[in-house]
Amino acid sequence: STDPSNTRATYTNLSPGDYTFLVKATNADGFWNPNELKLKLKVLAPLWLRPWVKPIYLLIVFTLILIYANLQHGRLQRQRKIATQQRLLKEQDALLENAMIGIVFVQNRHVMRCNGRFEELFGYAPTELLNRSTRVLYASEDDYAVGEAAYERLARGEPADLRDEGRVTRREV
Image (cartoon, rainbow, N blue to C red):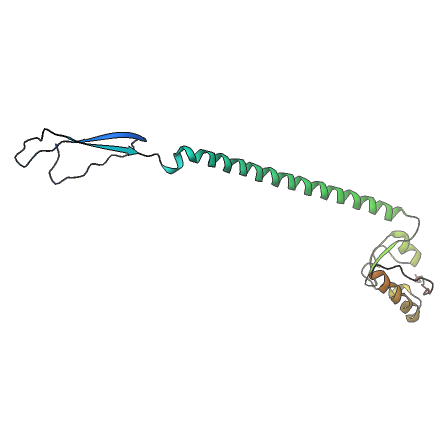
């Protein structure tokens, strides 16, 4: 029996399925109505537990696995590339430092890198030429100017015309 002012029924945590709600009422004098009211109810599963959502979950998990595998593959490729570059740099360093001739890398007429033999040929201490203008290697301003045309052609990727040569000089120690 319930209070006549209470006209609600609340059921929580019902499992999904079909239910029949039976209602039997009394009048104000307390006489029970012999007929009962039957309400057919269907409780649906929450959206996240419905059967059609499971393939979506599988698709999401599969996609996340593919993304992870792709990221790992990219990371491994980058590591291999870095390892190859480091190996090539070591080989280049070994070739540069063990060459019997002087080798210099120049950019914008400044020494970016040179080997020990080059420094020795021109009378400089190790690393002393780094970032210095190549002007210090030429005997005069005129000799230095001869190289300008060659640098311009090399910068455009064309072969340089080296028939005109400028004189270089060794630094006196």
